[in-house]
Length: 342
Length: 279
Image (cartoon, rainbow over all chains, first blue to last red):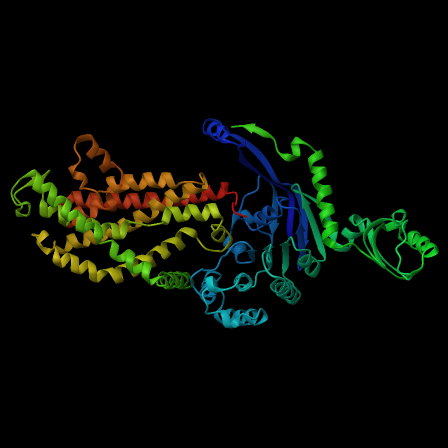
């Protein structure tokens, strides 16, 4: 059953365009130029119940805007979307009780009070039955190991602890859909790992439909089987992580260990050398040429060990992003936004 | 209905708890309210002294119908009015929430922003009255000679209480409406400053607005600001009575309803054009 259905969804903003310098600032008092920014351009997407989908894309690609549209924070310029059968921007309470939005950069808890008070307020706002509330709260605080911090003012918690509390607050009403916008931003690796593990466990246990944006590939690799890449407000890829590497990671990393301890001088003929520290060499070889290259190498050089790996996910994704931006730039003024007088 | 009351009660309780966190700031802001009245007493003493060389406190001299003691009594009463109608940080807080994106929580959660802010404000006011009641009583006791007529009739007191309650609601919804301007203009501090200045003058906080001559007096009486400070004080002092009092209360009620509607409409329109700033 489709939980999220998006059709031709578009969101454009008009932003003030100011040239550099004092003269331009003074001119701006009398005549302003605005630029149309097309944050989301005709997106189509369907997410089935229980799926965990990652939105990837460079900054300003339209990921957060899409989450804001789906959570009803903003109205679209055109197009339609339905989440759990509701149109999000109608902001019906019946819908708002069924989803949660967590933004890594935003604090929704009461800053000066212990998180327990904010949780109590959520219990009331979402009309959660008292027993169920206590059960869920205890379960979530144990899973995230923050039980002992419940009575400490939020302002005195570390960023990681605060993020855990934000997640608990968002999950108290057992939402059916969860929107996570950069949930691990700014966290250290331990906190990131803990939150990843928690989300993975919770999602598997509850089968909650989750849409996540993140810049950390580790989040994505740990959590999501389905990845949607957005660039210039458009979906340029929708599939699995493995597919991304298959389609966009055109080269493999080949590590060679030379048994005589010497690195031959003709290695460039086989591929791009990444590093050479005798007796070990790391090089990039075209995916479809790996077998042939290895057999030539083995034929001409004494090799003790060979390993072939996919390139790091970060590199593949960065490559995809830069290609997408090139395409966007080439599509010209229409894609990048037009300057209009105003 | 029970669930809703329980939610309101929880919001009130948590708001009260939050208010009690910063004890020092709270104590200072409560006590500072009493300072202006001291300066006002001395200011009008000086004005009356200059107007006539006789002892100003003897009630003989009058400025536009006001004797010295009338002025002081009026100021003491506007202090009470303002304790109900002033909403420090409400409009600027709404604008900040819009600019920084924290307004999102009211759009995402099943909660009405205006009701939430109203409860939050009620909690702050209740705490303020609880703490300020004793100093207020002391000031009024010390200044009792400025009220030669003593306590007004019970029905006037009732009308006064109604005027104060409506001054609170008017102050809240008027400032909330102004705060919604943040949906259209991101920087509103100058606009708020102008409003504050205008409000200080036209609400009767600076001087009784019935002192204003001719067309200016008429103009100020047409706008709702007088109901924030002047009107309740005038009710207590018996300056408006009988049919004029009833009409005044109805007009005040009308303005409250108008700004409840205005703030709701402004919020609905503002949210429609909101772009979700601040990430």
